[in-house]
Length: 168
Image (cartoon, rainbow, N blue to C red; front, top):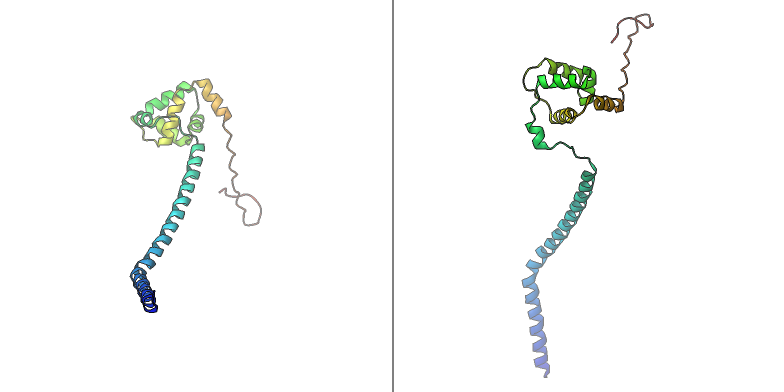
């Protein structure tokens, strides 16, 4: 090959590389950014999948309520039914309240109410669970429950610094 032909070939190759590089340059920069964004998204997806697996494992450890939601929704709870249930279980109002996880005032209100009662879903589930108990089983379940500590009353000091006077 002659010197001219070799020089011409080298020059054409150089110019072709230069033109190719100029044509690819506008695509190269966004392509690199896209690859970087894709890698970041893959990391985020991996982190979220790991967290989802962790939360699913925690959720599996939580005991699920026994009562089916459909049965809980359709159950009709009335004041008369609550009075008869309490009477059948032979429980005082405070004991019945403790068994259901409500206050004694609520049980009193239920006893005075005629017709359907509007109760929360958790309370409704507790009532449905207690319906199937016998009086002996209810007493046994009450005995298993921890006793609440009595609240201490504060005594206001009188003007002289001693105890006595009004209770708060």
